[in-house]
Each structure stands twice: as C-alpha cells, then as structure tokens.
Length: 125
Image (cartoon, rainbow, N blue to C red):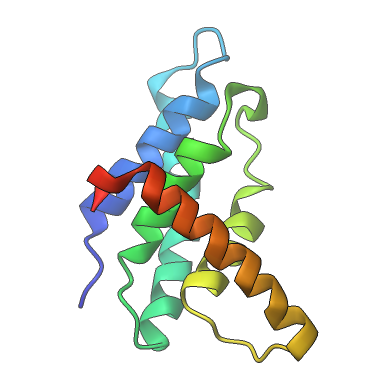
C-alpha cells in the first residue's frame, strides 16, 4: 500500500487549523507553514511504518486521532508535542520494539481502552 499524500496533508491542515484557532489573525502563510511542518514529521513516520510492512496511511488516521483528542488552540504553533505523541501511537499500532513482560502488561490496559473507544464509536468502522 502507498501513502495517500493528499489525505495526510489534509489531516495535517485540519490539525493546524485547530492549533491556530486561538491565534487572532493567523495568516494563510502561517497556516501553510504549520501544515508543512506537521506533514513533514508525519511523512517521516509513514515511511518508517511502511518499512515495517504496515499501511502507511495509519499515520493519517493517527493525525486525525490526535486532532480529536489532544490538539487544542492553547498549543498554538508549537509542534514539540506532535512527534513524540505520534511516535507513541504508531508504536502501539505498528510495534517495532520488544517489550518486557511487565511493560507488555500495559498493552492489556490499552486493549481495554481501545475496545471501549470502538464500542463508543461503533459507526466509525
């Protein structure tokens, strides 16, 4: 599968609009610059996900998830949070690291939370 770049760009633009919603008079140039920064980061993650043999478009879905759950105007144009949060989500969805037994127990918590979210959003599939 290949990355649907336009969809990723659209997701990053939507995220940028949320982040800049609290900025009075944010210009189109600022929006485009922020979108580009987010898309660059996301594309790097998509390339890695693809190397793992997984669908790189999960990155787009992860960006949308971050828009829904963690993005807010108070963050403004600061994107320092984006890379580690995206990496964390993608590690859960496309594991690349071995876990200790103790660390793996957290995945049971994640599994329960994911099941709850899926049940709450049954129409999303």
